[in-house]
Amino acid sequence: MRAVALGGGHGLHATLTALRRLTDDVTAVVTVADDGGSSGRLRRELGLLPPGDLRKALAALAATDDGGARWAEVFQHRFGGSGALTGHAVGNLLLAGLFEVLGDPVAGLDEAARLLGVSGRVLPMSADPLDIEAEVTGLEPDGAVSRIRGQVAVASTPGQVRRITLHSVVRAEQAGPGDEVTPAVTPPRACREAVEAVLAADAVFLGPGSWFTSVLPHLLVPELHDALVKTAATKIVILNLVPQPGETAGFSPEQHLDVLFQHAPRLGVDAVIADSDSVPTPARLHSAAAALGGRAHLAPIAAAGAVGRHDPDALAGCVRDALDVTGAKEGPSWR
Image 1: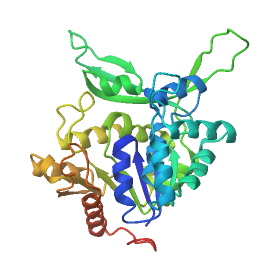
Image 2 (image 1 turned 30 degrees about the horizontal axis):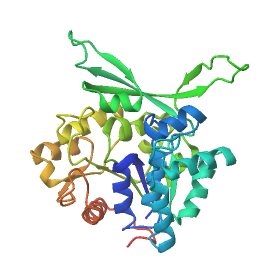
Image 3 (image 1 turned 60 degrees about the vertical axis):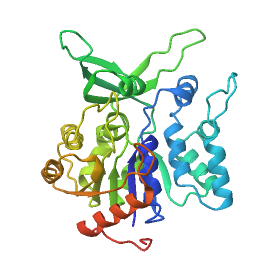
């Protein structure tokens, strides 16, 4: 089975960890809008793609033998102390170096994948760093809509996010020392290899993860959006276990689907996977999934003793059940 998972951060890591139990042919398509922490520093200082979410996806798909596991551990190691390297992950620095040396983020990710023994592939959703802009209510006393920009600002806002837009920010070339660099804002461009992977997939997965800053951005890259609409793959949405403070505080499971439809009205969904203990009104979720053309699959998929984390074995089992029900094609790697 050729599986493609779109997202970022810990949510994408959960999907990839589950999918590798079902197939060796997994492609991660990763958001590149992070502007905080180590990724944000490297993005601002070097003008490169933020590597953090890409690093996590590579670690999730790394080989499980001694060599792959050791490299994955090193890749995820974050420097302490109080110097210039404080807070940087080893993998972030390595990816930044590969991007600069090879001059191509896709080639750099493929080289890192070879180092980690990844059998699938990790791709950025765009070869350009992206900026998220959100319409937010609840920040002004008069109830006016505010606009905030940046992944960290959107993810941490105390207001209610209503809608997001996405922009590529390409640095203008400097005319000389001391001249101001003015970013040029353009529509986001999709990574060609990511579009091809979605079109060739047997199954495509959206979520879980930060809904407005990791999941929905993929639907706002025009070429990627069109590929998701056109692909013959089975399309599965995996919902979060708990609402995320700031982004989706107070959201019901079906509200997550409503927001997805608002951002991509032409996107059909074959299945929606949710944790049975996280859905207070199952009938509403079944109705919301049916409105998108799909079917809701509820099962106990939360990890015991880890709030907000999926159990990879249980999630893999639910994915298998959803694929069996929807009649997804079974490729040679299907187990």
